[in-house]
Amino acid sequence: MDDPGATAAFDGELSAGLRDLGWTTGSCSGCRRTYFTRNRAEGCGDPRSGCGEWYRFVGRRAGVRHRPAAEVLGVMTGVFEATGFRRTVLENLLSAARDTFFVVAGVQLFDDELHRGAQVKEGRYLLAQPCVRVRTLARVGRKEGISSSFVNLCTEQANGDMADYLAHLRAWTAALLALGLDADGLALTVEPDLRRRGELAFRTVNVTYFGFELGEAILLRATNDRLAVRSIIDVGFGFERIVWAANEADSYFSLIGPMPYALVGHHRLVDLVRTMTLLAGAGLVPANKGRGHVMRRLAQLACAEPEGSGAVVEEVARHSHAYWSGFLRPRVAAAESVRAVVAEVHRNENVALARRLGLRMTGADFGGSPEEFMTGLLRSRRVDLAALRAALGSP
Image 1 (cartoon, rainbow, N blue to C red):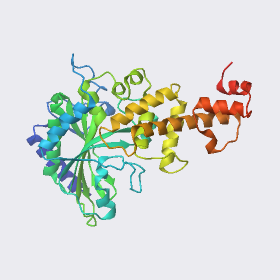
Image 2: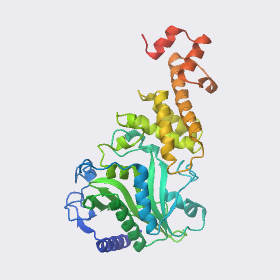
Image 3: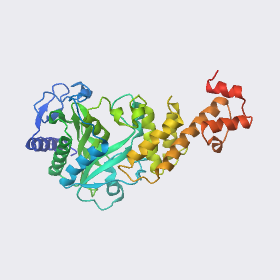
């Protein structure tokens, strides 16, 4: 699919196949993209293109029963398994790929085939894959539906054709409707530009629900004859976004993290600690470079949050470890993971205080809680009480 003729053929196959599945096609008068809906709505409804309003599914129906994440996953898994998909997961969150530190998407299921010449996995797979994407950190808390760590619920298949791709879309439609999502709110919009991922080319098909992007459905095709993998079907959704849509909650963040902190706006802190806990559970050790530096940087950012006290961090970390354990078997137990997260946050608090005091200290000197660290400074007479109060901003 590396030439205009192949792209046009893809569009024609997709349109014909979706019509057979009961989708209606149109060309959006606003953004001029091709879109497909389950009804005859005019326009794609995508607010990113100015074609609709944000989060129109919120509060649409009165008395919607709360459905926890585990229930949502169970319903969807049942639909996929009944249609021939096999459940799997990438157990090692620390990616072996050269271009990423961590698993960032379920399509990395085929990394060995693409990069190391491994035998191609056959069949259709379902993954509820914990992922880390730290490049989203700047937007966390500012926009609904954004997290630096999340579950990529996805279906994957190597060497599939358009019939297979449509089978994935059929299964996804059935799974979303099984949750009670409104069929009239579902839409597919086809991005006009051809994109590349290594030696694979693809068109992006966005899946939206009342204008909110739940995920994307991609059929990647090889651009040369060197790859044993001729194509990859990658249909990936943000699982937490699906949970939000199924519950029609007021905010995405109200479903992320322990309720007391999620509901009162500590969104950024909850996200940082969630991601740290996922990495700690994977066995990542904080460091000043490489993967470990990501962990250290997250702790630095958590310390900068006004509500980032040790007690809050510990509670969020404990909750997060239990959440991630529902999708991936952690390599590090809960108690040890929580201790590692709290210790790294404390370490960075102590480093920041030492800098404000103008102290030169080695890494080993920054251990312990902030209270223990300050007590040690006073006992060693490295600072006096007046200087410590000034550094803390106390009168």
